[in-house]
Image 1 (cartoon, rainbow over the protein chains, first blue to last red):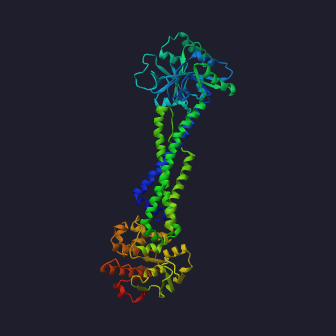
Image 2: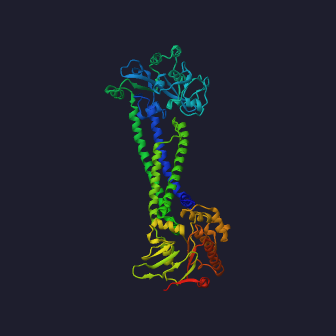
Image 3: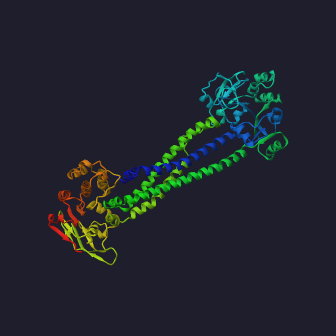
Length: 420
Length: 210
């Protein structure tokens, strides 16, 4: 029966008071930890998916919406632009542009978006083919690693796309040719893991709102992996529509800055800078995050108070037994340590429950986020900040127990025992 | 084994309590009689090192309590002096056995379950080993308190009104057990009481005046 065991027995002999302190502590720690995890992982995903894209050109509307739709693949498109409007940027040889990637969205399979694009998108996200080969012909698709795993799609599998981003079977394009999986990408950790990639013409064909002449198909057929040919085929159809163009500049300077402004002022299209819009998004989320953080800190403060009150209150009941322990040979330091230990034990257990809660919460959240936001989070990632959180928790346990501990160790044995 | 010299104590700085000198030899059994308010409990606390005297000194087994630091005094008391109070107090969160283990631990002794079981058996409360103190009767509590005072084989056992809450039958039994156990451990026993029932049972008596 040592002092640590005694602390534990003292705590467990008042299970309700212990429970209250633990629940409060766990809630506060859990909430802070969850915010940290969410923030960190969200920021990482956003950064990774920035993918060196400098400018996104699309239909006029909300610039943030354009970015979210074209780069992060959440939210609806702002509208469409025609190839004719965007041809200056899609054409090879623009002095400021290193890479231009057309994006056509609007269809999905089992809620996973089908993107009509060209093969340069792989360069943007530094993705590599894992098995099979990249799409070559119309209705051939290359799918992200996550989709292959979740939907259990294999090379050679075929499926019909659905209009829009929900899978309800009503909007299925069952009359058009099915898509065929020709390749699966290696996992990259970016949003491309969750995309179904095909050529732009396939998207047009599915929608069939236009007379697809033979040329596109033929061009695509004879195009080997050479992308200029692909761009060439797009440029042959100035009236067809795409959703947006992702641009990577060859270098950033005053001219590239002005390019965006020019587009916004002089054309019917909109240019949006991802870095700027994402910072704006952080700013908007930041206010909510700050509020949640404050709530979390208040809960932690209250939990500290609850530890303090329950320890302080228990001293009244325990003053005889504490005096008795002194009679039996416990020094003042030992009594002090006993009470401090009770505060620390509460803090550590509360911390552990809180961390467990936040990581379980994160796994649950990640399932939800994955289906609705195309982002996979992990509940098994631990942060250095959580270690600081432990130190903070220990500090609160210590401070909450300090006054009761001092009072307990200063109590006069003889007076206390004579009182009885 | 236990000596006092010119012990004086004052609660308020004005009225000084003067105590007669005491000298008990090893293994002796003494009764300290006095009416309520005569300062018996104060004297017992002085002897046990729970209070420090204004003047004079308490010498236990050749060690002057005056010369010990606070923490040395706590440890010395834990090892050498067993104290039984009028009302038995325990650490409520612990069982009877754990309370006795705690007494061993706090005195810096090795935990010996055998010793604990043996003592409780001798005091007829062996079956209460795993019970919480609150569930015991007053008589049983007082026996466990005696076991706790004895568990570290102290040189001196001090008992403050150990029988005042007990009926005649329990009173006789507890006193008999106290004497027996003190004798068995060769400890000096000093009982402080105003209980007239005990007077005839001890030949070594000190009486405190008002």
